[in-house]
Amino acid sequence: MTATVLTAETLIRRYADDIAYVAQQPPATDLAALISQLDTAAPRYEAAGINGHEDLETASSYLDEALRATGADRDAFLRRAHDLLRPLVWDMTQEYRTDVGD
Image (cartoon, rainbow, N blue to C red; front, side):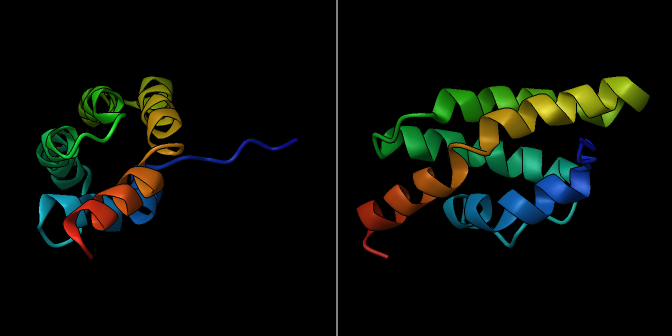
């Protein structure tokens, strides 16, 4: 079985639109912008009473580490962030949209 290569661009493509909605900004186009938007969105999810914001903060930390890392270390941080974001972002954003009446 071949492992899927996970890149920063993949994470941006998968999560930027949902995170940008909550951050009330245009979708991130680079990893630094995605980190910034996660840092903005996490407290907004929390204020709305949506569980999971702590995992988004942790994912943001992993992405920040990935910015500075190279090679296998970078890949590991990207994978850790993805493992936290994958089960949460879409559901949390849908709940947030419902809460704000969108």
